[in-house]
Amino acid sequence: MGLKGKNPTIKWFPKTKVLKKGLLLGDDNFLNLINWKESKTLISSINQIYVVPRIGIPVQIDKMREKLWDINPKLKIKILPSHKYQGISSTKIRGD
Image (cartoon, rainbow, N blue to C red; front, side, top):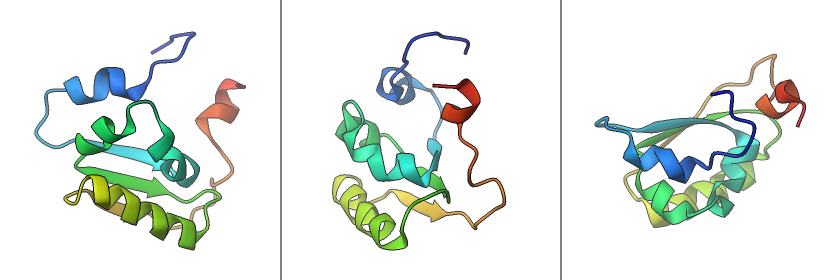
């Protein structure tokens, strides 16, 4: 929290000591998850992903689900319903 630089999820997420691990991602980040640093290791350590609608196209989301299931067949992926805050992102809030 409060870091000025980047903190790749792979650095800390697999080390968390909880039984089930989940991520909440905007659909734009969900569609890009496979490109994250050490993504296969990260995806293998996730139990569930909650996907917040923002800009993604359902066909793209379905294709990404299949790719992620190829890496982690037990991964649960829940697409959340549309909402009125879809244009807000942490990137916009930080001003990156």
